[in-house]
Image (cartoon, rainbow, N blue to C red; front, side, top):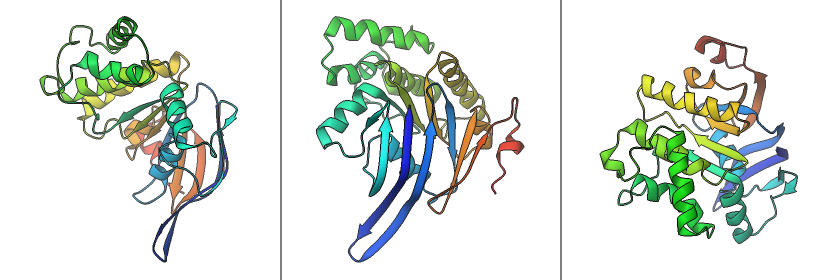
Length: 237
């Protein structure tokens, strides 16, 4: 599903160069559930931005579903991002003036899907995340957990190949965070590939594999033990 080879990212400001990611090589298979961990400045967000086609590598190559995407132009990247990737963010990134239904319809609007089909698919996606009775509610009429469910519905409405989740429980209480992780686990069980950035061991333990970054380097790539505790996944080599 995802393959990166010697991926490197350097940010330059005048004469100053910061190497945010250093020669990362790995493969993520179809249907995997992968957590990405590391302290602030470790490179995990840069890695996620590259996988999500929100940024381009300075060096190295990236294949998504067998297609090399690291050299595509801006328009091709935007089209591929809309077709193949779904995004869930800590801040939800919903449009306040739009209903839950209209927020979920947005990726299909950009893809040129007809109005009736947009409404049908958006309604179904909201039903899947338990918000079938909240279609017309705006973000300020929903709880944080409900807004994140809307965001997940928006991420899955185009049936993406991969869901990219960046600290999806960071703004939620523990109980609500566990409920949201329950949705991700269901999606994973249905065969969806999930890449999730988190600094919380309680959240990472739901994944099946953990990538740990430090100082721009991938320092470990480990399977998560069945029924792992938070303590078991918090170790940093």
